[in-house]
Every structure is written in structure tokens, then in C-alpha cells.
Image (cartoon, rainbow, N blue to C red):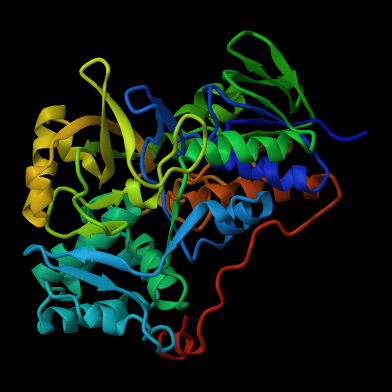
Length: 483
């Protein structure tokens, strides 16, 4: 008789566990409190534009091998657009294309770094020394200090700190440099920039996340026997003796099973665990995890302001601008619609709108600003770069802040993260906040789900390697940096 596997949480961690187990002939029951799957990587419907829009723009990198495998296994890979170049906009408004050259890693991006117009040659030399130092092992003394202190110790110039380290790391880790550990900063640069020439590539979803996880992935899972129950919030893990027997829902219904995965956010998980785990020393670090917000400003303008798919802004409040009109928008019918979308304005009149999404990570400082104040800042920054933005009419806007978007990668945070195997043998924990060797990313969430699935398969006497290996480190990177 096939074991009954129950997964509480329909974010990427829970979905990854469900895919891995279902793919190996073990259908699951997946419980999700919201009316949609995806967790923080989800969409919501905007009635004014009749469009599903993402709560925040999620991107993945070439080094995210487990997320890529997850997408390939369920047929989602064709709904991501790979960007062959990034576009950095310096303080003066000059656009700097950033792409790999012909040299092997880690030299493949040297030309791109050299051409950054907003860094002087002394800044670039400082940066090169900093990257070389960061490729080395992290000492306990370094790991006890924030990355901002490491930058000072390694004589990084103020300009390099503000216009390079800040720009890359705040976008990647969604925290300020004063709240990022050295090991997490190293992870970003080694995996994305130094180890393999494909690690830095950015893949952007070309459809709203709802179409990925709520449509295509749901069909893949249910066609293989997995049951998905939406609006079914887990309220308590039920015990029978020394093992978990079921998940009690908010409706008081109990979903019984044999193996369980709790894939909830770290700030919710402790409240549903049995009392014996709430005081267990292996899990006490969960309550000490901190979180950081990410804000998205969605703008629909009456004209195009840029033809690039995205830009990264330097020395500005806005960090990323995604041209959703180019990358891809979607109507309620679920068809990809690159181009303009219609916005209802003044009752019945229709105007053609061009859709842009601005992302601001680690947006603590925006909490005191009103929606209109934030829009004014963003629109002014866009107008300083593109003349058409100054002439554009704002037809519609949405402002979304995910207040607990990620866990903060503070120094020492990895000591607080629990493993997927809980102290109760038939209970697994999953989420980007568990031990994954990755920061709070889609890759980290998928890795946690895969690791939880591996534990369950091992317990059932059918061990299998679900976790995917990283990109192979280039020979020159091994020789130069010992990676």
C-alpha cells in the first residue's frame, strides 16, 4: 500500500517536494491556505487591467540548478526568457550593457566590469582585489561581522561599495550591507560570477507566476494523482504517540497520513508544531530569524519609455525596472500578450497602456512613505533617464510590499536554520529558511523541498538522489581561487 504523504504549504518548497515525490510514484495531498499556489512567488488579479500581476518580480540565475531542474521536469522551462545581457544605468543616465566575453570563467566578465562607466579605474582595481579576496575561505572572525565591515577591511572604495557591492547584493539578498553575512555575500559572487561562465545569466518568467504554478504545474501534479486543496490552512500538527498522525485544518478537519512535510514560512511554522517541538533545542533558532521586505511598484503608462527588457539602476531608490510589455504580460484568458494591455479609465474609455514593474529590495526605508510619495520618487527617477517618461501619463498603478519577503542573511544566521529532518522521524520541514546552503531564493526553496523528499524516500526504503549538483567549477577558477 502506497504511503499517504501530506504536505502543508503550497509555496515553492512544498511544490518541489510534491513534484519530487509524485515523479517517483508517490502522489501527495498538498494543502495551501490561499486560493492560489506559489506562496511568495505568486500573482494576484488586477481588475482595472484584467491582468494577473506578480506580487514581486522573481528571477532566477544560471547557477540555480535545482530550480531549473524543477522547471524542466514539469515543463515550465519554455516560460522563462534568458537575458544575454544585463543593462546597468549609471548616475548620469548612461546605459552600460553587461555581458560575458569569450574568455573562460572567471575571466569571462572582466570586459563587462572594465566597461562600467560609473566606476573609475581605481574603483575597478579595488573591485578586482575585493572579488579575489572574497573567493577565499571565510574565517570565523569574518563571519561574525557584517559584510559592510568586510568591505572596509578589504579597502573597498566608497564608490565601489555604493555602485557595485550594494547594487548586486541588495538585489540578490534583499538586505542592506550592514545586515548581510560574509558567507552569503560570497555565495552570490562565487556561484554567479566566478565559478562557471553560465552562472550569472538571468532568466525572467515571461508569464505571470499564477500561470506557472496555478495552471501548468497544477495540471502536472493532479494528472499524476496528487491532490491539491486550496484554502485549506494547516492549524496544528497532530500527534499519536511519538509520530505525527495528521494535519488539522482551520475547519477542524484532520488530514491523516504516514509521512508529512510542513513547508510554511518560518514565522508561521512554530505555531502549528506540537508542544514537544516548540521547545526542542534543534528548532529554537527559528524564532530568532528576522525578515526583510521587498516592494514592487507597478505602473501603466500611456507610452513606451524604453525598449530594453529590463535595467538595473545605480545610485537610485529604484533598483530594477522590468519592461513587462517586452518581457510578456498576460490577460485573464491566460495567453501571453507581449505588447500593450488595455486599461479601463474614466468608466468606459479604453487607453493603450505600457506596463513597467519597479522592484525595490530591502525596502525598510520606504515604510513611512505614502503610495503617492513613492510613485513620485520612481517617476522622477525614470524621467531623469528617459525623456519620454517625463511626458508620460500615468494611467494606473499598484504598490505591493511583501513585508516578510525573505529571511535576513545576518551574520551567524545559518546556525539558526534547522535541517529538513525534524526531531520526529515522519515529519520534514521545508522552506528557504531551512538548511540549504543557499540564501532566501527560489533555488533555496526548491532545494529544501528536494531534501525533504529525499528524507521521505530514504525512510520508505527507496533512496534516490533528488538534489541536483551545482554547475561544474571552471578549471581556471579552481586554479586561481581554489574553488
